[in-house]
Length: 166
Image 1 (cartoon, rainbow, N blue to C red):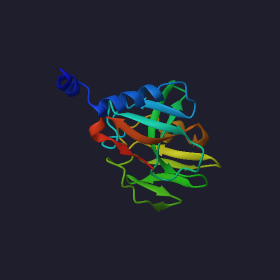
Image 2: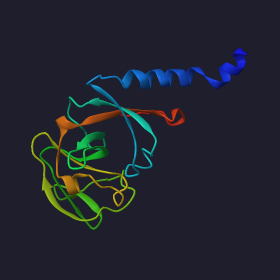
Image 3: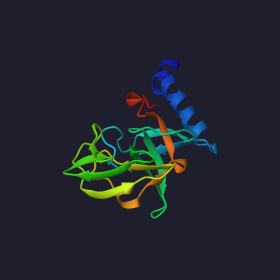
Image 4: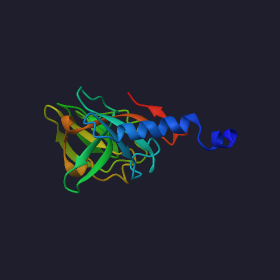
């Protein structure tokens, strides 16, 4: 009987369920989130579950953040492309930072051209990895305040795809 129960509930599953319950509480510095769209694939897929922490430090290009789209009242997951003080634009499908092309290893599709946006102190420019599928990013919402962001730290479900993000 114990072997049957052990097959149904292994320690990994119990640990992940305990993590989920713990982080689903009203902790104001840690948040769990279910990925609902494909704009960040293949890095994050629909039905992946992640843990994010309230951002309290400078973000880096390539970090993945969660923020609130106030127009639609939904949380959105995107990648940081532009940093405070930079001018971000796109030309010929390529991302330009201060008029210089960056090595955009995250883009899985070409980026539609958009007008230059200069970021102020504490502002970031975010895009999804699937640029053609991506909506609710800085091309439509404008710069995002880095203090309104949650920085992605772990993908914990499905546990076969467990990963840490720094």
